[in-house]
Amino acid sequence: NEKMSSFQDIFKTPKLRGQWGESNLEYLLEQTYSHERVLKQHYFKDGNPVDFVIKLPNDLLLPIDSKFPMEVFTAYAEETDTAEKTRKKQFFISAVKKEVDSISSKYIKPEESTTDFALLYIPAEAVYYEIMFSMKDDDIVGYAQKKKIQLASPNTLKLSLSVIEHWVRDITV
Image (tube, rainbow, N blue to C red; front, side):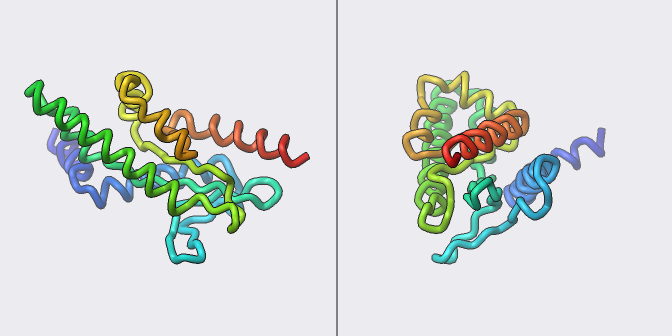
């Protein structure tokens, strides 16, 4: 039981949790693509690095960012007071939208051969599910789509990438 709590303590530190999310994403990408097609910490001309880009057919680059406000979600999920939970939920929604805005403005760069959209990787299925289904009325997904950001989770990443690959092949034929 002591080992389990020390494992959980790792995820209380935002930096370590971020590193875990990025490592998790890297592992999944390397299971899907050859090493040459997965570029870690790809820098754009303005100096902004995105966590990963995938080299797609016809040399298009798909930006994928794994930064996610997990500590804000945890604060919301663990809250028991109804009024405070509502406030923390709104804060979480704002934090996700802020992340979407950041990815949209910094990493979608067709002039540097990126796709005209990017992926935001959500490293936990429970959080992805919450956004997709429990927070449907808050329309985080619709907001992200307007900003040309697709959300992906560990279970949906491979399918999302497969659909994108086929779409890129079809539009470039």
